[in-house]
Image (cartoon, rainbow, N blue to C red):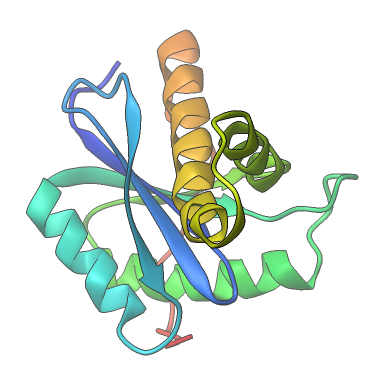
Length: 156
């Protein structure tokens, strides 16, 4: 298992949930929610620098059948710009099917409801995504997901 902090991102159309791992790459925890739109990539770049992240894992919203739909295409386009901005820090796409459902269920179980739950669900979904990626890497010895090639930056 590689040592170093990873960031996990759960990009939505309104917000981006951000999680980070510990320096050992063992445990994911919530960081913040970044508003989607102008400045989102810059804020994520700041977090990469602040936390000295070695990698960024981004959730890819595939359909339940495993196919890419319009949401996945939009994330791929946004992530290409993110990878360009963050280079040389690698960016990887990881299947995020059901992470938001899992996050919402965890919040309900913890008694978090209403506006507080909506504000937290993106961060918790990023934790679910990142923890799954860390667990796969620990089990296989290889980074989880597919690498993203840098491309033209898209602001939102």
